[in-house]
Amino acid sequence: MSTCRYLPTFPFILNTGLRKGELLGLKWNHLKQTEDGYIISTTLGNITYVYERDANGTPIRKILNTGKLKGKCKKREVPLNDKALKALEQIKQSNELLGIHSEYVFSKPDETCSTAGRLIRSLNHLAKLANVP
Image (cartoon, rainbow, N blue to C red):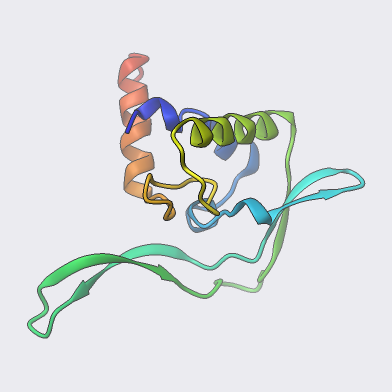
C-alpha cells in the first residue's frame, strides 16, 4: 500500500491531538455535527493488536484488542478545524479510490483498523522523501 495514502493522517493528528488508541479506533460514526461545527465524540477504548498464542506460547496471529478507556476522562469531544476536516475528506477519497469501505477512518485494505506501526513506517518514509531527519 502506498505511503501517500496516509499523508492526510499527519495533518489530522496535528490538528486534533488524538491519542494513538483514539486515532486507530476512530470510526466514521464518531464524527458529529453540532451548532458550532464538527466534533469527534470519543468513547474509544485502547486499540492495540496483540498476538494470539497457542498452548506452548508460540504466536499464531495478531488479533485486534479493544481495552477500556484509561483515566478519569471516559469521553472527550474534540473539535475539528478546517485542516482536520480537509484531511478527513482526503482520507475518505483515498479509501474510496482503493475500494476500502471500512467503518474505521484509518483502515487497512482488509477493512480492519490500521496499526501504529503502519502509520509510523509511513511517517518515516514520508520524512525520508522530504529529506527530513
